[in-house]
Amino acid sequence: MVLPPKDHPRYKSLLAREKLVDASDIVAKQGLIAHGRGEAFDYLLGEQTCLPALSAIKAACTAILSAKNPVISVNGNVVALAAREIARLAEVSGAKVEVNLFHRTPERVTGLTKMMKGVGVDALGENADDLIPGLSSERAKCCSDGIGAADVVLVPLEDGDRCEALVKMGKKVITIDLNPLSRTAETAHITIVDELTRCLPLLSDFIKEKNGIDSFDNKECLRDVLNYISDRLKS
Image (cartoon, rainbow, N blue to C red; front, side):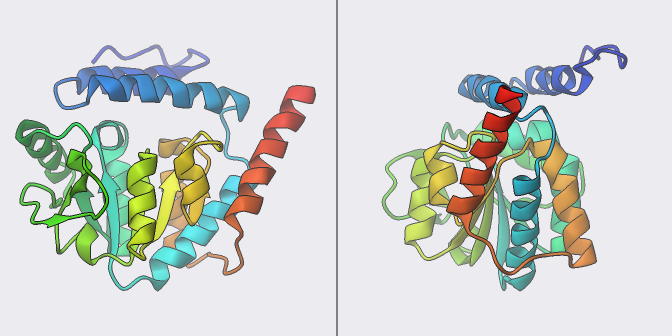
């Protein structure tokens, strides 16, 4: 990995790009495109966690603490960018971690589970023995003791079709998506419009402190995010 200079004004962003490139053997090339799209929305947010996102993080905290079987679903981008943050979240929440991929190959699943093992997490995913109804892609494959049995699923950097399918299964879906206009953002029960590595530590802290909120309206939160972006652009 080529580390950018720490005094660069966009050090964190450049570091994220290097992490993705460094894991290019297990990160789908399509994921690199998705990351760039997310960066564009982060510019509009001022590359900071806005107040509506904080409300969503607190609502996610409550949902995860209330869950009987919480599961964190991870793809290549999530593991490459935030394996340690996911490990801490799994530790403080007691949630299982499952690798679930759109561009699924045995090699990618094995590589990603090994990366999670390297940060102390025994991730599910290699022995997918269940299916998510309504999906024809490889993302339908899941584990019966993971996503299959989950009542609450955190799906960072998600595909809209699987988000919709999980909701139809009766699962409570939390997503992390920098695009407040995406189908995923509009379909999930709780959408955190924030950068992955910025919001995961906050979510872990709130869970550890039991600092959640009970009242939350996702559509209202998304409107607040769009108003926040509009106000920034006007000013």
